[in-house]
Each structure stands twice: as C-alpha cells, then as structure tokens.
Image 1 (tube, rainbow, N blue to C red):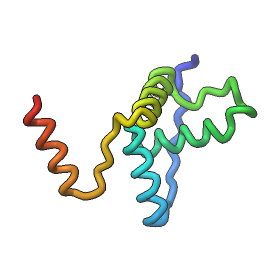
Image 2 (spheres, rainbow, N blue to C red; image 1 turned 60 degrees about the horizontal axis):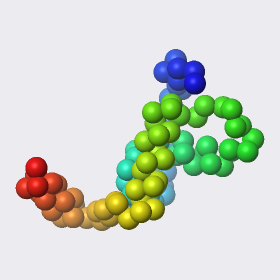
Image 3 (cartoon, helix red, strand yellow; image 1 turned 135 degrees about the vertical axis):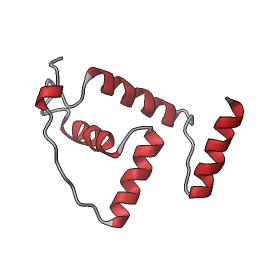
Length: 96
C-alpha cells in the first residue's frame, strides 16, 4: 500500500453536541479516535465503489479490525461518566 503520510489532507468537521457525543462514544467503544472512526465509516459506506483506494494505512486498518473484534467479543469497557473513567484508571494502576 502507498505511503499515506504524504497524501493526508486535514479537514474540519462541525458536529452538534449530540452527534459529537454519539461519535465519541462509538469511537471509544471501538478503541479508536473519532477521526479513525469516521474514516472507517466512510470506508464501509464506499467499499464497493472504491475497493482499491487506501483510506487508512495497513497498520491502522489492522488496529481498527482488532478493535471491532474486541468490541463484538465484549472486550471493551463503556465509561459514561468522569467517575467511571477515574475508577477504571485507578483499577488499571492497581493491577499494574
């Protein structure tokens, strides 16, 4: 696959508060950033039309695929509040 570093074009997208919450929640569940999640959605939406067009690097595609499998297999944690995040991080530190 071609090196995508030279082909990256920065874009800005304005979300409503609710759409941002949904996108962030979905991305977090998949273990990826919001831009990575949006690239994934675009790829899925256009996979039949642009099979050979690289949307993400091979490494990123592998990470996204693993994240989706982890999500489908229940290996993700849904952190809805700041307290959930703090408790989760505290547990990680304890277990380390």
